[in-house]
Image (cartoon, rainbow, N blue to C red):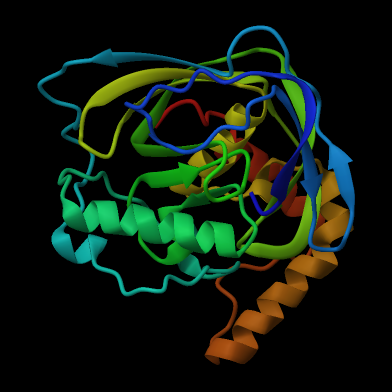
Length: 279
């Protein structure tokens, strides 16, 4: 998601385990998130109270990979710093993303570089395909500030449960600069994943962390946030999407790999992401 975050005093609390994340400095007081967008708009998101936003349980398993899943090779994880954000409609954003089976120093460096570009572009979440690598890796920090909040790293994530309650929220995306629109998603999710060391764990996410996770998980599934928008909402951003398509054509010299000629394509897009909880 492409919005930066700041804090105002409120009642939000954290209980993140180091097995999930790289510990960063937490402000001493409970918090409420305020979003500042690149166009100068700002708004408070819904205040989340009560239970911690994350609950983690670590599990020791011999294997995590499935026979039908393709595992990334060293070449798939090769990168050059600094990383650059891939923008719509680059086909990398729709390509199949491979599982990560090697947990080494190169992976740690990649994670560091992803956080670096995320902070520099005022993001609060980033997936590997958004920086040109088709592997199942995401990083996020709901605070959006280096040294504050919690830096979360999820590798090979899968959604095992999600709430029936749906919440509408205004989202942005680093791969869609300057575009913001309402997207409806489950309020909470349960995720199985691996951490940076390769250990498997389960985590329950709710509120903003759940929202950011689902946005980035869609990227790992080859889905984009406008795939989940209603026809009415999508129509409001069609002109912006066409502008990005033209930018791609002008920059690359190739025709856009996908087009938003009309908003009637929305019904097909909704079917494509209806089962996001399944890999």
